[in-house]
Image (tube, rainbow, N blue to C red; front, side, top):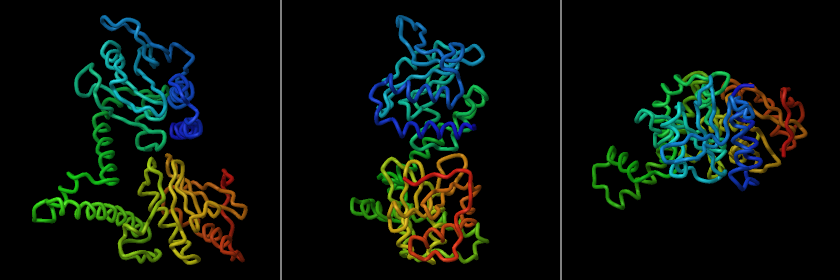
Amino acid sequence: MEIAERAQALAVKIRKHKAAIETEEATKNAFVMPFISGVLGYDVFNPDEVIPEFTADVGTKRGEKIDYAIVHNGQVQVLVEAKKVNDPLKLEHASQLFRYFSVTNARIAVLTNGEVYQFYTDLDAPNRMDAKPFLVLDFSDIDPTLLPELAKLSKEAFDLDSVISAAGELKYIGQIKRALAAEFREPSEGWVRYFTTKVYDGSFTQKVREQFTTLVDKAGHQFVNEQVNDRLKNALGGPDTFVAVPSAPPEPAAAVEVETPADVVTTEDELEGFRIVRAIVCAAVGSDRVVARDTKTYFGVLLDDNNRRPIARLWFNRSRKYLGVFDENKVETRVAIDRVEDIYQHADALRATVARYTGSTTGLPQPTAAAQRVAVD
């Protein structure tokens, strides 16, 4: 099993059980130890690989403990400090990590609440743990681009030098991506001011700020949607190809409205996949009846915004993409796809599903077979 599959398995477990976890000790047993063993591949019951309650006296500090020390080739390489799930991760609550980092051979320190894992090293000053992580892995929304770096800390592929060499780039790319995501969710005054001064010659007054806050937000979302559309057009045959997408309001930003929980991030691939599914089935139903609903585990496409009328599911929060299609019994079949555009290969199955919901099923094909079938909740 690849690290992406192992990580996804732990993510499912966390989502299922975290509401019942009320203590730090329960968090370690339920989530942190499975991360060390199931994802990274170390034997948590072998003290030659994992040392619980690791102690290393530091100056006048005696008997302080780190929750786990991960050992590779006989040397302590990774220190892990755990907090209770759902607790915010703050470095002032992990002073032991700072102290132990300077007196052990460990070059990696991990602060976690069982769901979010923050990885630190000493980029800013040798043998002194940085104040900001170089990698943040959130199991509620796994970023697949981070998993190859995580794999370098696993028992089977441990490569500390490679992790350290990539840490600087990872640190700043991660921070930039999180900053961009925050600006797209709610543009800051600095972000609005920057773009306003690019296009507006007047003074940046309160009235101008309020006006351009809306414009910058709208322009940003339109730009992202246009990039998705361009990729779709190129995939179908080049920039001059006519794309049969359903009619939409004049402003592209309003073309895709996704019901999304506050802690779920909708990706460009998911939006592109939704547009493709909607384009495929819009000949049978109005485009306004095809609704997107994103969740932590999959991106759903529904008819009439009804959970009992699923058209497709986009399982894109993993290293391998899967398209979920449904048969006459509403049983889901997950089909592996290499690219988002491969959804077009399953157009008949998607049209058949919609036709069954609308009462016209004669002569329509059934969904393609696949290895995994999952009943709809």
